Image 1: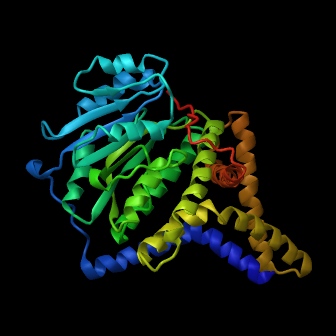
Image 2: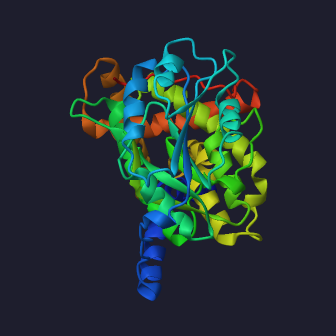
Length: 391
């Protein structure tokens, strides 16, 4: 029982903090030996031709701003194309895009989901690189040049931009928690990229070489993750570029964020099953180490080990009192009590920022459990159920 407790506690710690600490020291050692890697220069005539693809479903509220944002992107003239796919949209999204002849509009009345829209867009892409971004996110002016400079390195098959969540002073637990989570994720991705490769890309902003892209199955839940990891599985690296970022507002509330997290968790299980070859370190040992440490543990066993550690801690104390185990139990109880208090205060719209992190952390792990159940009960559709975001 004691051995099982310490294994459970170690895995929970390693998943959320230990891997980051280990990665930090590995990068420090690597820099001491080889120096900090230099960023490739931006030379206009050496940048590849590029297509920006946006799949939009009923995004009329964002579309004027999104188009304006896209058209102000800094990239050599004649090298950047735009394709917007609006399949199934029933609002004014297609008509807004149709006012801009510089954008290629693909629209049909039937809604087949984002994956089908992306497949249709890719049939119309003939540039060297394709960049994907969401309709409700906004890119910094230099985003495309910052991304595409990395393709001068032939070992790079995909480049992931940074997701930034806009958090104001009056942010609730959802906004503050999501903002903190993505800052931590961004740090891990920087170190992952410097060690070898980022483990998957987020759909808010990522790019791939056109000749390496392959269609994913129609029932794929996390298309962005699968598209990028299939390229990594071919032996190419995924680079992280924090100077290219997509800004979006947080989910409207915790309920909306939970909807999104459960879907991601269900898609995570699907991805792990489909990418099972990466679980074995024989082919790409460093990538497998990063993949298991950064993704697999979070999406599979860690929430169960957290519960097991709590239960075993109680049983150990009941069997034989020990100050060490009592302190560990008190620490766990205080953490979960803080999360529960955060839930109560959030429902009453009383915001205490110190409680946001434990509350969001527990919501995130609950979403993993719910996502696993949803996937194996075959209740997760590949069609996006959009989470409402703040204005």
